[in-house]
Image (tube, rainbow, N blue to C red; front, top):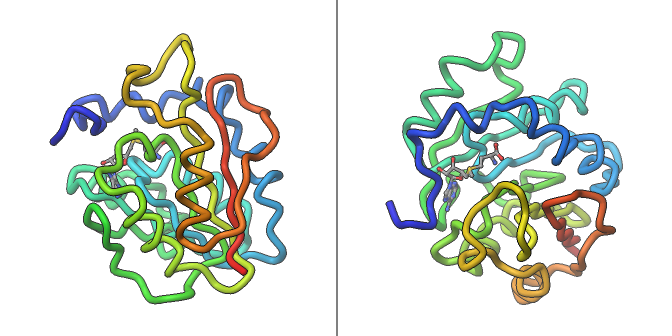
Length: 191
Ligand SMILES: C[S@@+](CC[C@H](N)C(=O)[O-])C[C@H]1O[C@@H](n2cnc3c(N)ncnc32)[C@H](O)[C@@H]1O
């Protein structure tokens, strides 16, 4: 594990309900502005903390919840409420590969992951592979400024760099309106 990576010993922090105050899923959902979505992919899903509210948004829909760490996959398999069986599907992925078919999803999202990536462009290209035509990618990560919580400033990535990376993998992308106190949101659309 490199220094950038989330330390799985702090897994309980991911489930702190206070996180919903600074990253309200409804705000993300509104900005994603999807038309009749069915399938979503959460990359770096951790405990599935955000996969749950996203799954709730789509009746009969599915969220593939990907993570590189076995502990996170096991956590989701053992702790997600039974009602989410078959609706949130934990998937063990690797740093730049996600074992899911092309053009599977209406939305690929990543929350508090981007600053941890070893090869951001390669992962974004892989994430793009999973998007249907017209589908969206949403990246939510820490603003590169002092915030009461969050990773060291030295490893935070400015949103302009995320926009460039999304554009480089072929998405029409831009920064979404600034609605969160500590995080920015970048959204890209697959043409
Ligand atoms: C800070 S946690 C955020 C978890 C979740 N998105 C949330 O906000 O509750 C980052 C997660 O991304 C996972 N991760 C790190 N690199 C990854 C990669 N290349 N692909 C998928 N998951 C990754 C880590 O194991 C960790 O569970």
